[in-house]
Length: 167
Length: 304
Image (tube, rainbow over all chains, first blue to last red; front, side):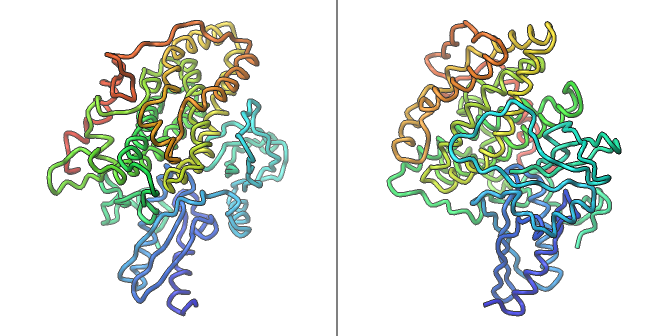
């Protein structure tokens, strides 16, 4: 049963923002797995997007600060490694927010059944430029400024943009 | 709620947990089920996690040397991301090693804030590192780097795909995550391999030379140690010999598409009868560790 106190803690944790893509909350990003309240103690469980994601420590600090500021004396943040995060977990709200901020949202992630096939061709994604809507875009790099994004360039409006990778 | 308008705001907060040791997650495996599965030799499991973790750590450090020096900005970012993914894997694997086999962790002065995975990374000597020698040599030029990354990521992806089935919950979770990451690394290296092979005469010449340079240490990737045999028998690890054929087929695929021959060079012999997994390393390893460890060793309390 979700008590009033637990709902508040969940709401607070869900509204904490991703430090690398601040247009997304942790709930939008799909990394918030569980918020458990026991009196003034809260245990929040999150999942890393990438194993080495440096944002994880900041997310943890932000969760602790936010919940403490709202009177939860004892805040623990746990990391759930399994199941591994997938870009499919980004919510519809999160996807709309990404697009509004000029970032292209991920398509459905591949779910390999059996060995992962080697791909020697550039990754083909059907994307549209989040700024001008043109589908005349080109990949400049599979690796962007954060672990979870790739870099694209729109050949119509000539602006570069980031695309959140399917993983 | 923190203000994200300025990247510097975070630096002004009183919480100093961003710095050096104790970077907020004291235990990266907090909340993860670290129970040793029934019938598993905990010490062997720890030693095995150390092997996989050291491969990732040492190679991550090596690749990170490209930061600010790659041929262009995109490759700079790509290689930094590859290094970061491997560092993330290393952190979890070293933490797993420490939890399963605490005797592997070097002793530090009482009161030291250094967490076990950092103690393993920064306070072990060369002979205690268990990585394959393949990941140690200097990067060389971009073609050498591409050749090495293709071979290593093909090998690691094959290993991790099998490790997903590990009875150890931590190794299985790290592997499942790692598969997604290393798939990108292998594709990146494969595409550049093809591009360099089909580029100019000079790029092809350099790629051939690069492949020839990295090849002698490639056999060592598939040599099974006693530890690997034990963990494979107990259902928590993967015998590297079991991925040799798959890796070979994939590399052959890239080679034939590139129109390159498999290098005809003999494998490197061991050092005093041992290889990287036994703590016998190449000359480059000492210098790599010196650079990687110097700050931590000079400030074992994480204060200056």
